[in-house]
Length: 304
Image (spheres, rainbow, N blue to C red):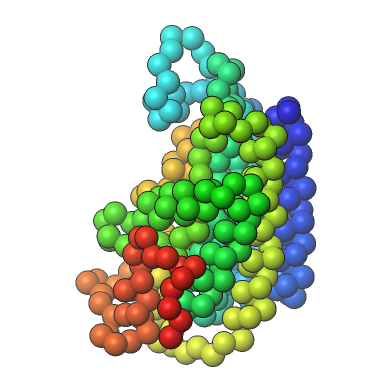
């Protein structure tokens, strides 16, 4: 399987997801910027703003290549005295809704290879509600488990834990949201062929639009007021903190001289930071805060 065919499939996924999101939003259209990376390759950044349902979102495709920098090799713990070239391609998505009762969502799938023979796939999908609805979280995890179970019975358990550990704000001691699945460095050393791993990655990619358009249809008209918008600003602030402090994809993109506007499209249009803020005891904000924990069994959580 050649890297070009993987990149071509990713491009097609970008097209189909953008189409489905535009149809679900009913107003806004994606703006596309094609860009070239100085060191080699480029991509298509597509951003949607000021829609009926979506405040801001991006569906990005990239395929970049070139000589691996010393910092990149250090990040991957590769020691060599010879130049090594890399190739990286993927699709990355973040959507920020207008209605605080709709969740933020993120998905990324990617492929990476180097001229020293190393290659792997990575990716994941996770949900960051402003207000955690247990039934919504349960449904979300049911969809991801079905995707995983179609390829291996242990994938969901393993990758759900990986997501809990990865999408975690250590400085806040809280998860970014209700998690999802996350995986990285999947290659034939794990006992699967390249085709088998790519089939799994495809399934994760194709699950995105049906999952999020479900929330767009279900939650878009739920009522909200100024207090909910204020809390949305706080929760968006936490999202910014994770992406700028902990996210490896952001760091990798900047380290490989990726397009800054494309990398930072994941940030919301507005966010708030309130000094020493604590939600009122017994409030729905406090309930959400109490559920920002690792290792919650969302599949079997009790629905009030």
